Length: 289
Picture 1: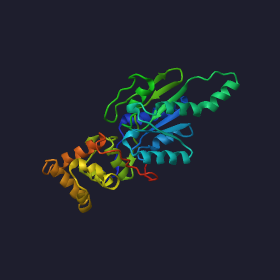
Picture 2: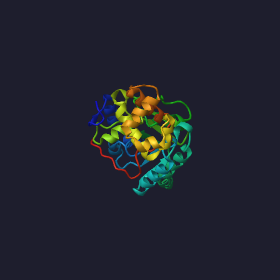
Picture 3: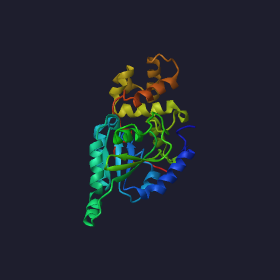
Picture 4: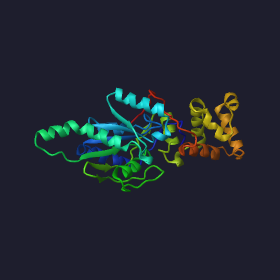
């Protein structure tokens, strides 16, 4: 399956997750739409947005430590200008969680004030986390709850069922599996999702992804290529394809371009190639649901 073609990948458990989330949306007060800060727009699932509807929600850009800080700020500004609540966090290192909790409380403040006027004691805020696989939902839940309530993993599709988790006296949290949409109309969206690990590696052509990533690195962070003993002269003189060939040679892999490509992708996922945002701010993407 080539990423240059339209990708269709919608396992049965994801169809079930979509149905259950749609059925339970009325039970929650606020939805956390979790996205990957490196691809904030490409990792926004239009199916998730359909499920949310008019329900109050927050776009949470997770893994902000892996993304370009200035691009993250511009994305948050863009969402806020569109009338959305947005915030960046690093769940892995427990950064931004208090600010997120405060934002959630601020969103519900008018509702709670109205309840108090009627003599009703506000209950805990009921939350639902929705997003595509591998954007860090389980890690966020573990940090949010304060103990390992959710299973974590470095591959998509770890969470398979829904359950309520208590967060002190302030919040109840509904954990849900990640939901991918049935088809990526824009092949670049598929590539970005693949590079960041939202799609299982078995579906990928690593050399296609490595070429795409190298192209972005050349434009946005050429310094990162020094890791492979690539000079600025090499970058100026060579095409992206020739750069991959040169990197393969410098890795001592002869003509094993697949292995070299895998290592490049792994280095990016492991933050060895610097902080890079693959969705430049204000870039639009195309979906088909």
